[in-house]
Length: 150
Image 1 (spheres, rainbow, N blue to C red):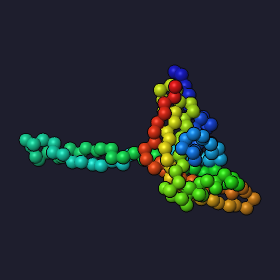
Image 2: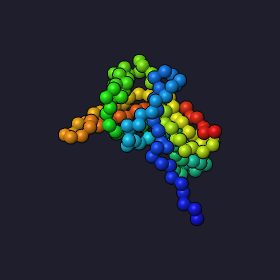
Image 3: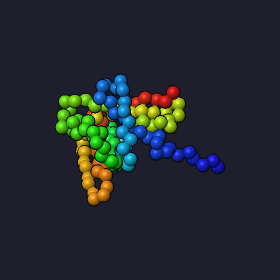
Image 4: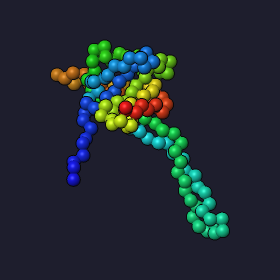
């Protein structure tokens, strides 16, 4: 049996655009990152059998919405996090695009997920004799668009 080929660290990237997606810059200092894709669901009970109402109802689970978030930690760089600070304080009034890149995607697989982002949290931490570390959580403002690898 052949061993699986795993995706490598440098094949999952985070890029940002402040000009509507014309140019993208990579944020390579987010060294520990986690992408979460969740569904918000609703539960609906329906009658299982009208002829025998003593039976338990059916439960139908339905997807109501999708949510994608990126959270990570890394090094706070001089000038590098100013755009995130500005975006945090601007809220929704300034659009910034984010995209998750799966650079090892094969033809037909999802290579990029992108859309407007909200800076949900942005932190800094200092420790003696260390560089300043950063933590960030980004929420996609709506379901990201997907681009397939060609």
